[in-house]
Image (cartoon, rainbow, N blue to C red):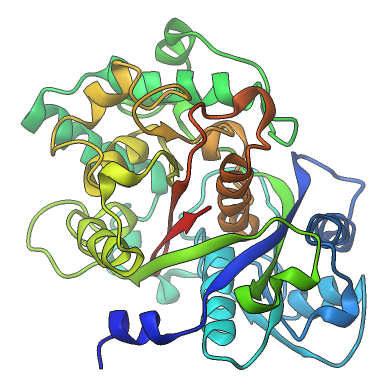
Length: 387
């Protein structure tokens, strides 16, 4: 039996409640403070409590591997299974995938997932002095610096398809416009195209405003089997499909998170499992760690043809009232990117959009299908949600 057939034989799983701690810099708050606020908010949204949770999965990257237990124990301690998960930027979406499998298989009815991070300032991906023996060949050659990976593929995209600096910069303009409407976002001030283009260069053609910040934040979600959702007051949104995978070897092109080809492959798997196609998606959260990543994702996910992602953004097709509303909460660039918490933040925005709860950033037309694309070192998770 293939994974798609197995998935369709599993129980329907839904998101029952979501909760966030505002993203930003909180030097006076501990990891526990951040996580506790997010968990309690998710419980309130779901209409459940600690006694309803049968297992928990906690995501973190830069904190100790006991963090999940610490976060859950900030709120309750009932002896349940608590697993720690780490997959860089895709950490908390991986926790959601594991919980989805466990519920779908009938092992549990209700699970909690939580993601948290308090990040140091500076670039991610360098090799600290004395750690050379643990670094990959790519890192030693300077290719492990995240903005460099995205910039290299962006330059290639410009050469092959004629996309422009302005198109990549427009992603940041859109993201900060949306982030200004999101009370949980780290940055809530719009920026102009000129400000983005004239900002400090980080990795040509990507300037400062086209890079996601390092961030503090926490997120949580309660998942349950659809058959028990009626016991609670939350407004359930179905996890209709998923797909996960890692880059396949390619003799050409950029490696790492931005390697060409594999997102397109697993997107097809997600669409098949959810019985939808790209044209059915009305709202999407994509991994814009750098502005170029949003353009790559638009093409890889089938919203635009190869080479046309930049024009898709430039023409407003990714705006809140566009063809596919993308990163309506500001995305990683404006909402912020606390790595262990990012995946669930993406999920939370899709849920709020499908419920009609996104306020000033609400996508018009009563969206019914949304997609999440979350990339990390170690692969990508794609989820499709249905009202």
